[in-house]
Structures are given as C-alpha cells and as structure tokens.
Image 1: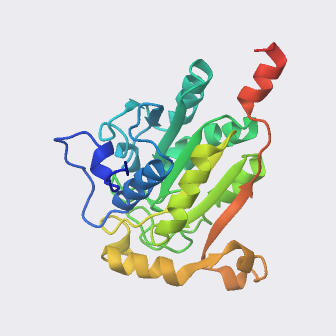
Image 2: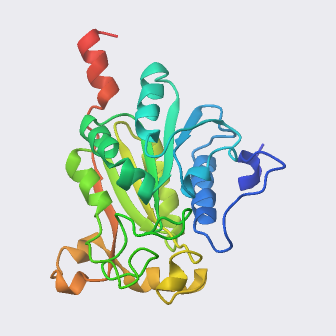
Length: 271
C-alpha cells in the first residue's frame, strides 16, 4: 500500500495558527524540514525531541510540531538539547533558532557543541536581524545594512557561522537560502541521518523588520536577492575577497563521519 502524499499538516498540531508575518521564511523552513522527515520515512515525530530558545525561528517547533519540545531561555537551546541526547540517546534531538539566538547570545554553546561533536542537529534560521524584537543589528547583519540600531548602516562584518561551525569540528555544516528549497530538503535529510554535530544555516527573508529597511519590502524581492547573490562554495573559493562582497556563499562546508560525543563516551565507559 502506497504512502499518502506529503502534507506538512500531518506533522503539525491541529487548531493552531502559525505566528509568522506574511512572507516570513520560517514557512519555507517548516515545509522543507517536514518534507525531509517525510522522505526519510517518518510517519510521525514520535522519535524526535525539539529544543528552541527565544525569537521568531524558535516558534517553529514549539508548540506547532506534534512532538515533544522544550522552549528554553534565550540562547540556551543547545546545552539543553545536549543534555536530552545524553539522557535519551535513542531520540533524535533537533534545535531550531535564529541567528541572534544561536550565533549571538548562544554563540559559546554553538562553538563548544561543535567542538565536542555533540550528537544533535542544529538548524539556524538566519534572517540577518533581530526580527522579533524590532529589527536591531545582529551578528549576521551584512556590512553596511540599515537596521533600527544602525540607521547609518552596520559597521561590523557579519559572522560566517557555517564556516565557523565547520572549523570547530562539526561533522556536518551547510548553508542554503530559502530560495534553495530542494537543497534545503537534502541538507536536512543529511543532517538528520548523520552522527556527531550537524548544522544547517538557512538564510531567510524577513520583509517586515529587515527587507523594507534595505529596499526589499516583500518576500519576492528578498528571494530574488538570494538567487542573484548566492554563489556556490566551490566557485567562491576561486574568487577574490572583493568579488565576494555582498554575496551569499552557499553549499556544504563540512561533511565527515567522525565519532561523535556519544561514541567517545561509550568507548570510555564500555557501554
């Protein structure tokens, strides 16, 4: 008997309305992630636990996924997820968060989880701004971009999070945009089926609190920008720094199968 066609609603709690603004990239992230779940053969989310902190992207799993989830303080989803995985290693533990939550206040946790190769999946929705709290500058805001706290344009270079995570020792690290739907599905599938620390950065549109301030007032304008600005990692490695200014480097920054934290603990303790 064939499986029913994919529907995101199958994995969502009934009667709840998603809280995101019109045109928000979180809708695409939800659809691509749940499609990956479906294509991996999961008919429900009973084998998963989701952790999130504070921010727009943190609302993706909790309370909307029909699954167990933990909503943590700002920036603390990764250590909570690590603890859950150590206590219940048979579960797939997934973190959702924004760039402020994961790469701002939670950056220390991110780096050390990657260094430990902790056996969790982290999905960072990077809308390049603190979207939920009013559009303030974030660690990933492009150089020169206007925000509510940088009306003259940001003077700081953005953090290259996917590259940092790869350099810290994560088994898997990738970056795609919401304009790369099929690539996102495949990245989620790879992250969900690997071991060790797996990280997917999704560059996502926020028309409400970022796009309109940089002259891209709706989702289409931002998605067109993503398509035009994206450059594959293999091509980027052949370009000079000046040629990469304003571009979004997409691709897989790390893909290895080294022992994760759980493997090393089992080896040390014999169980």
